[in-house]
Image (tube, rainbow, N blue to C red):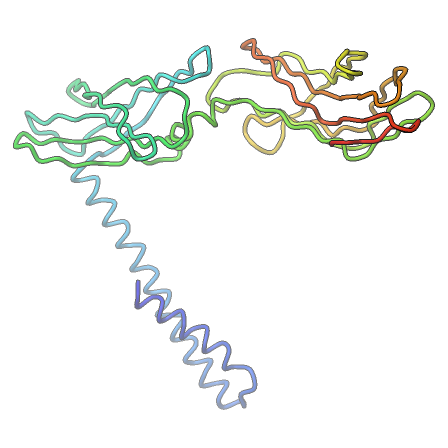
Length: 284
């Protein structure tokens, strides 16, 4: 890696020296530059081969493959997780444990069951972020090989709480209040569904509230956003009837969403105060 860094520095220096050189010097530097590029390419290929060799050695001494399946609890406060692992080689008397850390502290240790082909273990984990999953292989003579179970599918379980949580976001960026109508001209509303729970949006409404009393409701439709489980609505051309207001009255616009598992979520996206005969946006 040190050699690769040196070549990169020389490569960049060669490019910088091209500025202000005469044609002969430029030709010489271009030739040197081409040689450096070829050496850099060879080093990068060598590095890739070494990484592949390390991966193969790791598999030979550990696991050939592993996977994880999960079932989110109905309360969404955790999940039941089953890990399946196939050893690269098996020796009679060998055993394995599934070890789970939370932010560097061991919270679970479960023996894997061997079915003649694969190991499997099931563990129940409360919703939290910062899990690490390990397979600890033990040989008959007591030697241990600790393998971190790291893969894209495991990332979702590492951040279990975040991936079981649903949240809302709403912002009103442009509005008008004229002739008894509050118009939402621009803004956005977002619903992020849990990535690890099979839920959907059952209903969504914008609710206008005056001093804590709901005055009007309007259904709101959502379309898929850019990320998994994300849904959005660009607020525009949505009118509400303005209720009668007294001095220092507070008007709130809230997004209320019910999920298919019965969870109710809400977020206030705009608050107005009626002062001096005018409606003033306080938050949004």
